[in-house]
Image 1: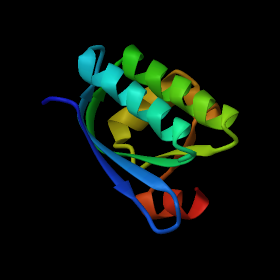
Image 2: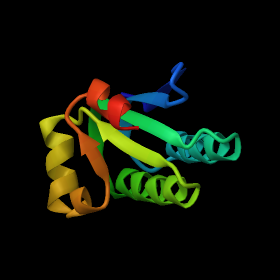
Image 3: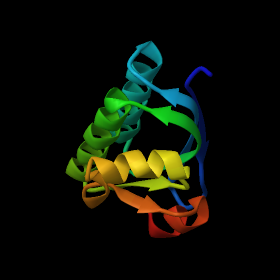
Length: 114
């Protein structure tokens, strides 16, 4: 399944990026990274990433999430991951990235915390 991103801007100023498919190395992942950079440049530094439809995540996908989180923090913002599947959450925990990445069980909880 190809990696896709759907962007929604909320009245609160937060941006929700609903991801689907596999987050693996490739052009689509690079475009996602550029999207995060573009959001930051345009002063959108409260970002929720909905992972509920991500079916697979490799080290490149993890790396982009960590880099994006760091970039948003440098811009005095917040990046929250929301609703990861059990499989995706296990990968994040196995790599101990749950201590670096802010993760909420639902999109609504992440939006409230953004």
